[in-house]
Length: 387
Ligand code: HEM
Image (cartoon, protein in one colour):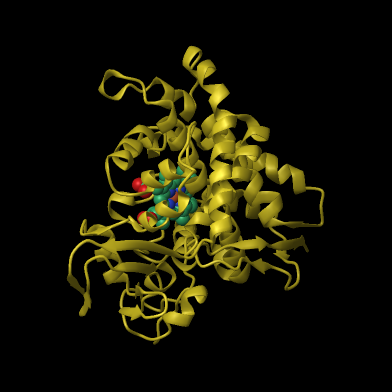
């Protein structure tokens, strides 16, 4: 069986080679599960592809916070280490479990909003209201504040595409400054009266006996917004589509709501919200038999790796009880998604409650819209109706 690849990367990865060089894009495309996992866990491959963007951002590196600083935090190095340490406690599974009832209430409120409607859009009416509500809760900024910040975050996300344009980069720089100007006035109040939110945690941290510099603190929050707002919404919408398209699996989940967690894992495997990850080789090496030169860029095609026939029996089958899905949809190694516990709970609570409350849900025609993006495996519209 041939490999299934990210449709947006298909042009340069449509054969069976686990690792191949694409002349036009000047990247190695990694499509086998084993090779992708090796790259993620080998410190010889680093996430510094954004280095190539930094010189093009001259003039943007100014206070109170900058796109450059944000990009540094995505890369390997001390800023990245400090970032992970600072946010890890608030995103740990134990803390997320404490948030679960509140997340359930946020989901219920979103479902109340559509309860009287014969038809609605899962993306706009459920997925985004849930993820916006969760970000509002996490940061303690209210829903209006979260909406404003996430508007900026969407513009910043454009830099994660394979080939961002100059205009997207400039716009992202403006959006980072917009976020910083929104957040800056909140900090003194959180210092004086800390709550249980992430901003309060960050302002009270004193690594090495000193509070975090304001610039770094703002950058950390922006990083959470950029990395944490889109993927859970896509996961929810992809999950709703997968379950609606597989009525037997949906019945299975509805008969035993505890299965929502394993359903989410299978949705992650088959519909990874993140389409690909990038790494750079720091030494000459050989990957799955292919020589890779130092300094080369690699693109890990998660869609292909998660359906690798060498790793999964019947890889295209949607099976919510698949033993050991072992997907790569949260990445791995030193950059493994730090918000994965939260993202999982958001999707689990939403899918369980959505199908529990509306057992008669069906796709509303063919009018769903897939996003034209290689970076995100996402739906922009998922119309459903009550039957
Ligand atoms: C459920 C959906 C989610 C998916 C599929 C997902 C996926 C990923 C992936 C694949 C990476 C690795 C990026 C790389 O290696 O280059 C990542 C990193 C990250 N994610 Fe998530 N994520 C999700 C939810 C979240 C949430 C809810 C948050 C925070 C609130 C979050 C915060 C982050 C951060 C901060 C990073 C960067 C980690 C680092 O570079 O060390 N994610 N995510």
